[in-house]
Length: 342
Image (cartoon, rainbow, N blue to C red; front, top):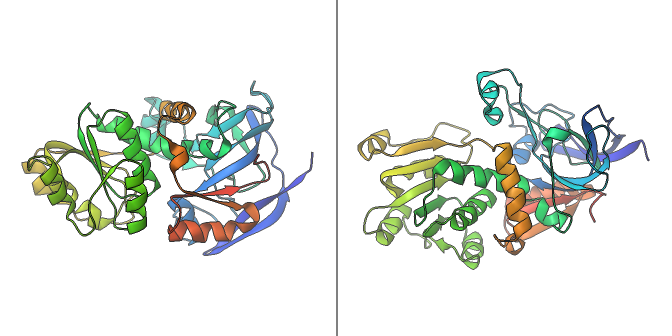
């Protein structure tokens, strides 16, 4: 096996280059993964632009990982198995970790941000971070496991009941996946608010309701619910303008679920939340069970994820992949194909 590989290395704001670097060593309990695809998300864009608070120059980004085991080491896994990664690094000592909620570790870190990620030919990961994906699942679909796990966790935290009316504010990848998971979980109606025309057309093509162009989301939800509003509203945009709409979109005693990561303080009408006795629920990444459920959903084909418009770029074209992800004009998801893709 070769001792060097290609990897995308971040050198500072808007500077990412593909270089030849050493293939990583495999510690005890870890496996060497030949990367097939890495999904690009908003976190990766913040790293590229130098706005992520933890990423250090020289990091190999990439945390939405699918690949095959090239060296199983001492893990007991099987060479050739396709795996999706759960890229969380928890401390194991804080209150959250001691209580089993390692996904909200006080010092939570991620591969691809705080440790080398998967925009490379190979990546090493501990066995505890790996989920075996059925061999018949195409790698391109398996690459959606990590963002899908975010949606699974959000819907689980929401306490969705069969027949609920659900509003999703933000029609990006996480918003669409959340809408699909909510529908699959038994929501009676799922309505997505998204300002971009192209995305609205994609969302409607998936069989989801869409807030009409120019319509006020709160007024539209009221028109569908005899003036009451959504039982559950998901903020998947992480934008202050969306946060301001949440109490009005949501009914009395409804639940507001914050999925998108807000980078700045957002205006929220706390009086409205108080007077309507709404519940405000935070969401951070996912649990191991959520990732396992995401693998099952991808393998089942029940969400129809193959319908999502996906753009694919070679690792050599990683800069163009980031540009495409930032533009979001003709794809809902961008995947970077490493040498292991098959």
